Length: 601
Image (cartoon, one colour):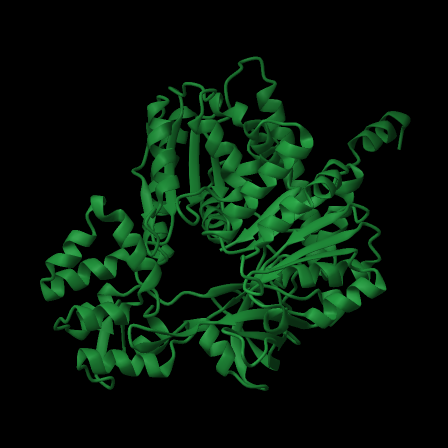
């Protein structure tokens, strides 16, 4: 190799943190998989070089391609965007796929054909990886985009009042900036595929027509992965054996929290700290019985729905969502029983009351409150499909081998005169050792430990939000990381709700945990929450952040995550000498860099 080539190769070497991240990503891959990665990387390099050459061409014309950008908090938008991009590539369309925080906003003026797949989180918030792009497009600096043709697919959950609001706002804003829709806005509930599949077909048909008008697309050679011996996934879960199922709160605790250990032996599944485990649930048998009793329906009756015929009890047991209330079911119940009160509840001016009902009631409560006569087929049409639940993984494979651990708060409470259960948590609580559960791995690329293990980390995880930080501490201990680890943990009572207390005490003793700050809200007359501890330790917290620490938050998105974010703004403003607006922008930059990561639900 000549001196020029050596010089170019040296200049192209990734930065140390990028290189470390690359090495981590390749861990555990087989020889065949490594060959596939090498082939894929070579193809990507060729495509980047081709795009770069086109950009440098004297014509100055933008490349004729389809750009797919996704914003995803739990992985659904990412999965759909990957499917769209894969189908576009298979159809011979030039396509690039980018996560929203990797898309340079300045390229919008040069973009010609853009697909956005984006979810809405909590009470109408963008996913963390799309926050920067969403704020740019919605802000004063957004450019006029008369040459852009676009389509938006919004993902959401109609159990929440602000259903798909982020997708709708992006769709409206792009049109306001002068861009032209080449397909109508798509709005997908938890039954994502029912909307995403036909939307994708329409969009790609139209995109193909538009790109042909621009000019013949470059030849695209689709990449085909080497078939894996194991193909366990969301669609084909692995039946994991339960190794342990242990209550980790005191008997007098108001909540039942379980530590569950599952075996992944023989699955071929791999995960990293920060990832989630998907669990396919079944509805509690007692709840299914209540539905059949209230509706006076025969569980043995065969019912046809969407091309399948099953006994009604089986539909309610394994196929339909009966623990989570949503707008569509309220509307169907209003029509079935002629209930004007429910019709009024769905009006825009009743949004506060609707939010309270969605948060506090399960469908069975409304079925009892608003009687109606249901035909089984109409009932199934009003119910959404049962979907998997995601749990933050509470273990590092370096510490536990071919196992995966979970920290699960069991939903089991009394309300409106009867017992209420959660679907997956009830199943997890009821599955004894040697029982099996259908599971899959859901990667979370934005919730990763620093590639540079000398970086300090700050972990904020009240309640079961502490789960991924158990994995983080295990991983840092096993890998010999030199960075410091600081955990903020909160719950109701020290004596009954201090999750993994012995493990944290041991970690403090062996040096794998350097600081532990606690907040138990019900042990004193004046309630103390984790955000108060953040403010109390503000000077030291800010010093860690100024020194390059990464900060992580896991847990409830409705209240905790917002309160913690507000506390962090106060800390940065007070101890960094910033205005609240500047402090918020500073945290936004950390979020964009990946130094501030949230796993909230």
